[in-house]
Length: 312
Image (cartoon, one colour):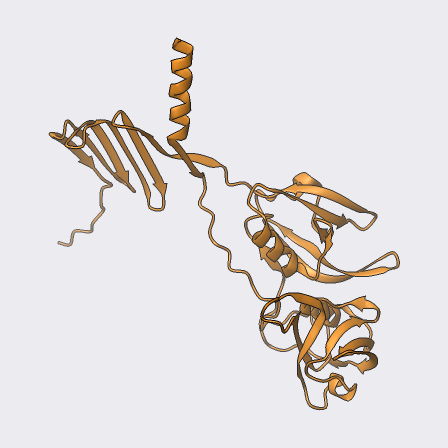
């Protein structure tokens, strides 16, 4: 009988205990794929196609989805794309045989390619066509230079979009360029300079695509599968995203005991035998201020001292 009562008590106690993360995790504002920063590196030249592209979203209001290819949003007059016959509204399906399902894929191609002539496969309405685009080599601008994209919480790493040739396949990838403290990647044998090719078996379009999908689709502490190329071979490894841990934030056992804490602002409250009008003992802390109250009659409060300058 005593064991049964104890079991009921412990079960009731468990239902009265709430948990919160041990560390408050800030909300991460995701960057768009296209940002107004220079992304060519070390003074190298880059190729300009003379167009702007965006995601190929369906036109149906009833079923909004992202379709294969990227849609041409703007064509520069007398630019490379214009001279090749591309028009606003065209869909670019592939460049030199590589699928272009995301704007960042084309951006990475412009930054890393050593060629200036490209074979575009496009779609206009229901017609699929091919055209040759003679890219224009341009010099660097004076705008800030993009170094990489960062995931500051889940994988705690920096990535840069690249086009990788692995065997006979050319794919978009995210190269690991920096690892931050407590990053879970080294535990999964992922090092700087490794190329991340797929997340949970789905090909990446860019470094931002990897970060966006991890933050948007997965919880902290969850496991994800990354397909990685380390320069010698391709492997799939499991990564447990960074976990902030848990802490007790609230305990409530009727009038017997009540405890509550918060991280923002840093505070704690505790009361013992709280009979509404008064508690036998209560304690509260808000930031540096601490207060002790006994029977509602005796109160002791303390706070940080303040250093002031006294002028003569």
